[in-house]
Picture (cartoon, rainbow, N blue to C red):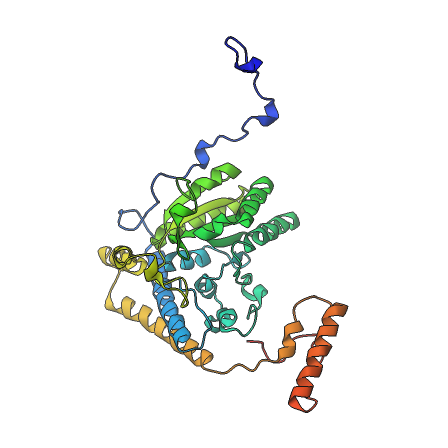
Amino acid sequence: MTVLEQPGSHRPSPPPAWRPRTDPAPLLPDAEPYRLLGTGAELDPELLGALYRQVVKGRRYNRQATALTRQGRLAVYPSSTGQEACEVAAAMVLRERDWLFPSYRDTLAAVARGMDPAEALGLLRGDWHTGYDPYEHRVAPLSTPLATHLPHAVGLAHAARLKGDDVVALAMVGDGGTSEGDFHEALNFAAVWKTPTVFLVQNNGFAISVPLAKQTAAPSLAHKAVGYGVPGRLVDGNDAAAVHRVLSEAVDRARAGGGPTLVEAVTYRIDAHTNADDATRYRGDDEVAAWLEHDPVTLLERELADRGLLDDAMRDGARDEAEEMAARLRDRMNEDPVLDPMGLFDHVYAEKTAQLREQAAQLRAELEAENGDHGDHGDHDGQAKGDGR
């Protein structure tokens, strides 16, 4: 027994620097996910209509991309079917100058941001590492390694603030990504620097086959925010209106200098992890069926109908627009791309290193020997031939 533990002894208070500097109560998320649809809340009819059109288009995009995978036009596709409300809302709350940092499952968010659907699938087709110009729509490269893009989002947001730019970075990650060290580092840096960053965790129940209960013992993923001194918000991820409102508030807070917010959207991955996954090995049909009753498209249609806003013209218009998008995507993906292997050395460094030039020369020689001629493979000191898509 130490002196401090003896009866009647006085345990001194810790120095002021060790004491909590933030009241944790305002940072805590609600006990239940925030909802708007079906609650009678006041909602903008135009916003509801826009969300509906985008979610319907997103559902069609997911189905078309899945079909292209089965046809061999895509190497792999991580579907976001069932998560369309999160994907669409994340894109819609951003201004043109803001940045979106998607994970590998978030091609739909990139498309909702305005990107050509075929370009968004370039990586998954195996054409190019990214397949699009990140600066055109301010969409960072799709991140296949879990959570590695989160510190990048924080760094960009911090740099923008230092430059005086009115920019917010919204970073998307799955529940599995919250088990990575990059998630911790990003949240910690964002909180300390008060960067204009919004973290959207799409909790779809599984990290491939690992359920959330085997990843964390926290009351919710939103509760993790408190440990960093960041507000945590818990929202129904299938309620498009609720996700849009919560993310809008987080983006506005970040833009006003209030710092980062961690938003956990509780949703569900209806399809398998990818076409290479057999989801029946770790979850039952009853579980999937229960979530289908809480489908984001159905929730919006029910809300619009209850408000007298959904008619045949709106429903048919949304579906026709989705079908036109799917037809254009099919046409683009059915074209065989013309890719120059020498394009491997483009966009690696602003100025090629000696080692990169040596590797390029070696590949050029191998290609010329294989073709039996001196084909035009160039130096590729600038852009690759064609549009690289």
